[in-house]
Length: 136
Image 1: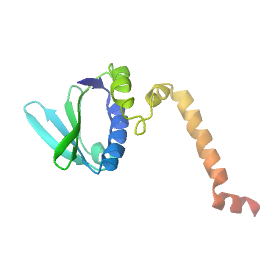
Image 2 (image 1 turned 60 degrees about the vertical axis):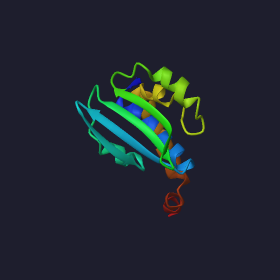
Image 3 (image 1 turned 120 degrees about the vertical axis):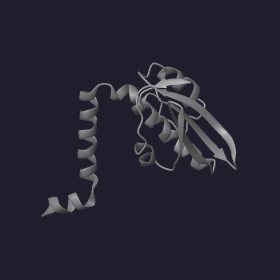
Image 4 (image 1 turned 90 degrees about the vertical axis):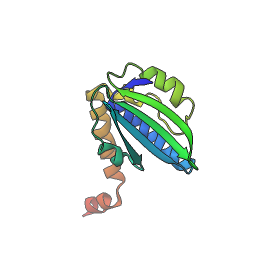
């Protein structure tokens, strides 16, 4: 079981969604709250965003291929103290599907804001429509 923040879990799920598609399987999230458990089929990250979670919720993430569980992990929404374990045990196991250390860069909001601005400006300069409008 890994202690992660919701943002970390979203990052992890993005990798698991890619892996499930590659394995031609289904990604299922089981959200255990108190004595109840709700199961959700996740096909894209928007599906997960519809799930209400709070601190200390236990989430079981399973990828099923032909009704067999191929990948299974448990996560607790918390302070993110196990992020280095997640990188080592999950990200290194499936490196094609996860970006290692990308959340570490998100902690400095000033830096990430500048990167996003530069990327937007760069993208808009490459946009054919933008180039066309500049000519006039």
